[in-house]
Length: 147
Image 1 (cartoon, rainbow, N blue to C red):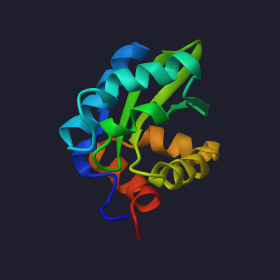
Image 2 (cartoon, rainbow, N blue to C red; image 1 turned 90 degrees about the vertical axis):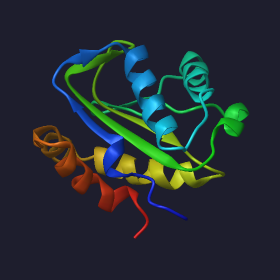
Image 3 (cartoon, helix red, strand yellow; image 1 turned 120 degrees about the horizontal axis):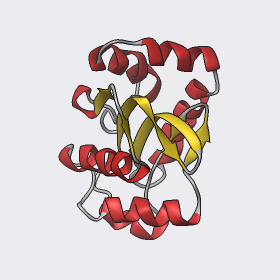
């Protein structure tokens, strides 16, 4: 990958909760402000969600656009927002919302790294216990950024 998909400014922690739509909006806004996607990407995320839920299990949702909306993606990137109050994702409890934008097929590599990380419940608990966005970034960057 040409650049690290996760930068420190793309990681946030909120003590409260959010609606699914607000969480997706924040995920898209972070990706947009990092220069990875255009403003059309939030709509693309909503389109994807209408056809298939991006809830992945273990308190994780990975909202992303549809294949038809690849033109809204300028570069591969990831946004990570932890909602300690949780997000109701179609009846599923979500703590971590990771917005993903993949140029070409790069999102598959990123998704794979996230899936491995979040398949371990102890790892999820460890990530939930982290106090600061900086520490959360440090815990995730090794898995998702090109080594």
